[in-house]
Length: 125
Image (cartoon, rainbow, N blue to C red; front, side, top):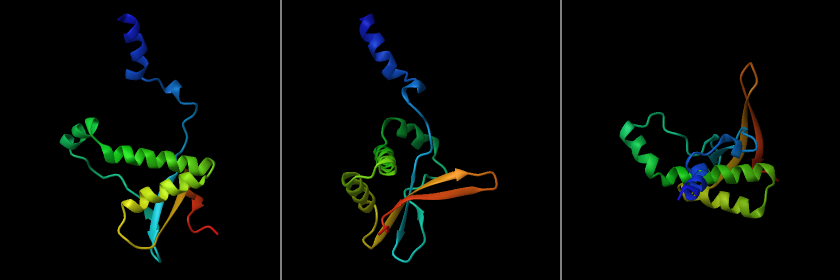
């Protein structure tokens, strides 16, 4: 039994050394044809304590957002047809019908203010 517990311990108490590097993650922005760019799936400004507690155990929406972030990171590193298709499908599933564009951006802090760099856009030729 002590051997089993020792094997489970890293899963229960993960270490930050697990990650090779922690850096900025690309953000997803959307816009309807002719509209302004806006963040896709923004976080709520306030979450009541009761809902926060429930989210510790059940939060499928957040899991979906984590998957989108993973897809966005893959698209930023090495775009593939599969990543693009999956990203497009997941984004459009949450939006009303229409002609939507999306893009991936990095936001950097450069002393005087925030700078935005577009990594990829669905409107690219």
